[in-house]
Image: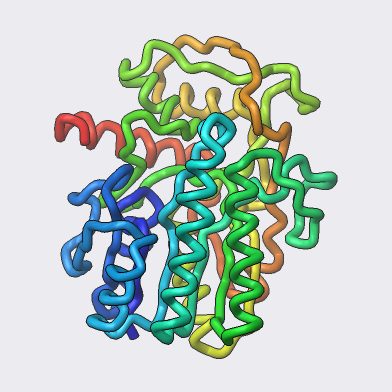
Length: 330
């Protein structure tokens, strides 16, 4: 069985490719346009094809040439404020091209599909931790673009028998514990990466977007999941579908939230470096608090986190940032 990984040169995709290879999977095929990913992040043993996952001819050729029967789909635009400014760009890349990918998958006989969804489909949840049965009211074009793909997956599975798992990511952070990959985008908006860059002098200050939310310290609360734990959830999903598991949508998180200020405190504590923190206005599309209920993924997939420790996640991010500096950036 051959797996095609779209966006496999990116942050989460490259970690998942590492996990596939570590698990002894036959060489996964990586498809990435390198708009945010990096050629060097694709490990040896995984052929890289540079191209667009919305290119029907290219994807059809890859599926047929390599005997692909499983797809893990990561490729997407992911910055919430950018989606507010450029909704049509997000609907094109995240939704319209995903429709093309699904149609190509069905036409070429792909059997199993794993989709990278997001906690942004919940919007402002009524309850925390939020379960998968919560009403879906995304507040950003990013969240809506992902929810549309969830709907397309459900309808496609019903009509054509495609088996799927949709994983709703919460806030992904950290790096491969073996130091092989990490969050490498220079202008990434991930809080822990930005804070790590601030400790190394790569940023003059760190901005906190809003301190007047209805949370204990006024800053947004998020559930931070370590990237290797998240990557292993994709392998658990593959095994689950191969064993005949029913179509599934599941949260990926630790069922525990930290505020922005708590994360900053952890970064300062682990690094031993103080840095300037500036309070800035709220960003559009940011909910006050969102924390994952994770009973479904543990029960259905047998997934168990191994790196559920904020300070350890921060330490991994700091170590990776130092590696990037040592190699002269990306």
